Length: 253
Ligand code: UDP
Image 1 (tube, rainbow, N blue to C red):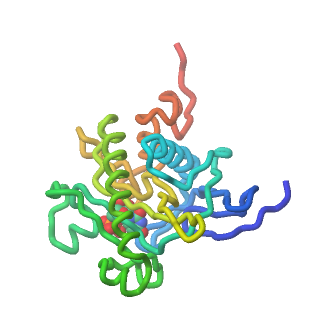
Image 2 (image 1 turned 180 degrees about the horizontal axis):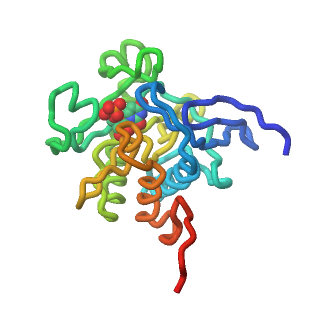
């Protein structure tokens, strides 16, 4: 196959030019980073799991009428996506206090929030992705007030969908981050969920045991990240239940 042109390389994914204009191929790497890439490692199989999981969530969202950039999965590590104009914000939805909101506001981790809380962070590694207000976003032109209203509506629908998916398999969706892009049609644009939805960008706690099944396993050195992601994929039926990440030989009676 002809060498593809790399369009962008991020911490966990690479974007290549796609086969048709207006498309990209999104490649999922095994690299894990945390704390603005101060902590990093290679987790064998993570890219394969996130490619599958993101496909699963994006397809489910499309089925309930939430537009996404996803077109189709191409192979173990790659998916075909629509090229979108990325809004330079991370949209975080929180159902339970954890991570930065706990630290910033002194709310104990695990406290149920009175309602889902939506926050915007500016995507800027050099600044450490600072929390920004709607005033900042409008004043600096990162998105319009209409975009922000649409982003909140989209984020809440994703929250309901993901919370339901997870609840069905005994997992609590504590919080998650999405990124949103614009697709232009003449002078008009609509917003779509872009980037990825995977345990890299969610907090997922087992309802019974409280066990963490997300990137906090890596951030806080709590065990095998690949095992945690495999467990999420297995419960959701994204992997057959007899396939484990380690693929250890098992005796069949
Ligand atoms: N998150 C993310 N990318 C980021 C920052 C946060 O995917 O650059 C996710 C994170 O995994 C969690 C949610 O957004 O599910 C809220 O993260 P938080 O603000 O608590 O930041 P953290 O303490 O995880 O850095």
